[in-house]
Image 1 (cartoon, rainbow, N blue to C red):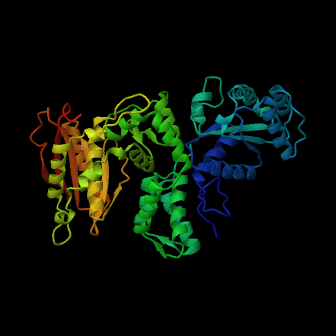
Image 2: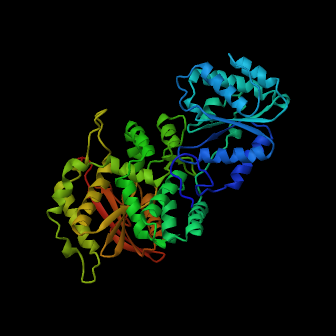
Image 3: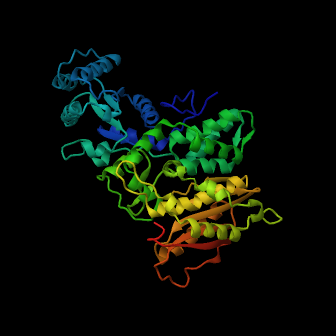
Length: 505
């Protein structure tokens, strides 16, 4: 029986594997046209699985494939690279001599023309930078005479944007010949999980499949990780339900030690101010790969360009964990709030939450405590967290205290929009959607209401709460007010929480 793979490249006989036929064909076209190209994508996108499948398809077309990984070649000498090249040539039946220089390797290739070779080098960033430059120069020369020798295609695989490294005017690795490996689409996630159902009989609720795609954005490593946890924990359940999904999501967000996320968190701490701007404001930041913070966060799969060319979050799972990582747990405010919460008085006889009473209690808390407990200093540079983060953390801490006292559950939704926070509360068997954001402009205020209604509909909810923090030095249009509006069958309940930018911060 096959399984969901959570480490290393897929072995189709052992792991559920998507063929991704169109992507294989795209790679084959480049190889058969004797192109030298790059394969770039963030970690956990299935690059290794992809190029192994591509290698198999390439061999069926009469090519021989040489593949090796240079991840640990940072301090390697030229002799180590040359020995690898010779070893791989010998492994496919060539009588390669010892090479002392790259010129000797190049001479050998130029005088071997009785076969068609494809060279794939994985983790190319791991190669000693000096060797990389020399090697690229050699490959460039071979590219221009490839019609007369055996090396018909060279493929460099990496997680950083190596097109930017090798894409000068004289390089064969130009931007047109970069082959990205995209994350899974929604239908592909469904197809992958259906493989398990067909082979074992164990099914997934449609909502579970949808939620896995939403929180992972289709990132192959995370999709397989979520699916693997679900089937390993409940191997005998005929159908994996939403309740089981929530348990796995909670584990991933609060317990799992994820190697990839640990690396991301280290990088995130280096660019905390920038990430807080993305998390807590609606600033339109142009996506510029030459900006170091954008480059590093993009390489790790956290951000990407949106349709307008601005930065947006890519994988909601990472956004959720970054929220948690930056949260000021040690200020003691949750305990302070709990002391005044008689949660049993916030529900009617049907067990429904009294939202006006809840919001009234929160406003009373803010009037007494302000938002100062949620401002933190950065230990590295002494800078303070953004006021926007204090606003949102204040409300989320209040809700966390309430949910804990009411013995309910809360979890962040997968919407990856900037400057907003979506929380879903589960209380007495009912879901309640809250969105919090700072007021920026009339246009964004109006747009936020319609977006929230649309999001509520996608969750199957008829009601959503729109909490907007409003600085009190502004004169607002008359329609910026507390109200209840209906947007295509969804009730949007609007609450304004005023604050003083000087006194409260």
